[in-house]
Length: 327
Image (cartoon, rainbow, N blue to C red; front, top):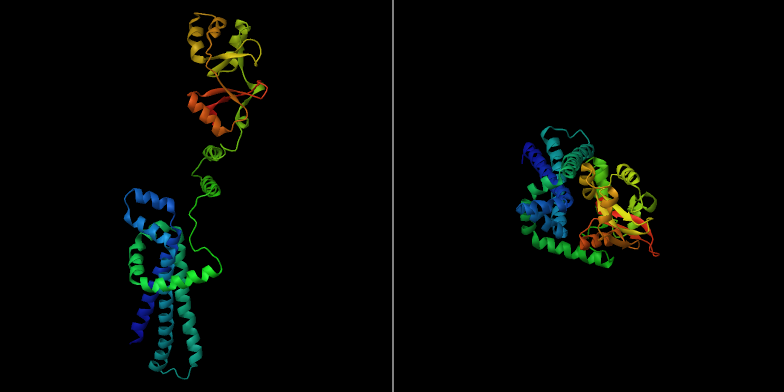
């Protein structure tokens, strides 16, 4: 075999090793959520990637088989090339060991740089795209070398069993995983600050009390039947809410509520005084205890088909008001 042919074979071995390296990182790093989206679009190769990830033992076994075979062949060819060069160019006066070390360093650099580091860095940047392109060939290799892979996996499972190490990957998505993804989206600018806050609040619905986001007692605006016409107008102008509580005297003597739609047409046309309009208050006011979580509160809103409530404490006193649209 000529020196040129051996050099060509070494470069081919580098390409093969690069294929295994890039496939290893890409198939292992391909994100399940993106793959699920591709599967819904009818991409069969995405389904193959998920299957390979579920049987990662087969995948890693074939990668190691390929990389090690290529490395051994590359080392052998590198050593034989040195001998051929010594014979062809009559360099016997040079120390053969020195030439062998130089050959070893060159080939090692070639494999480390172009068959390992560069392919893996590319695969980390584009895992799904590369995985889709390499999965078919990788599936064929796994099928062809299935008997060898079974033996390797049997030994690996036996060793892992001795140390009681679980070989199956845990695919459970935890709360911390989701929060980490949301935080990463906020850092990258994909999510705006308000969107980020909204998503975080959703995950806290079961752990936060209704009182944590309510309008406090001191800030609740209400209309009383004893208010003068001028006072009623000032309150409506100062607090342009969609709904106003109606009380007989103080905030704890709630009778019901009126909406701005109930008041504005008559006010604009001066048909009736406000003091007369608020007497036709709505009585179906949703009353909730302050011991509910946000999740339970939203369930009550869905049952009542309402979006506004008054929150009472254990003594029956008003402590908060709640508008479902605030969360």
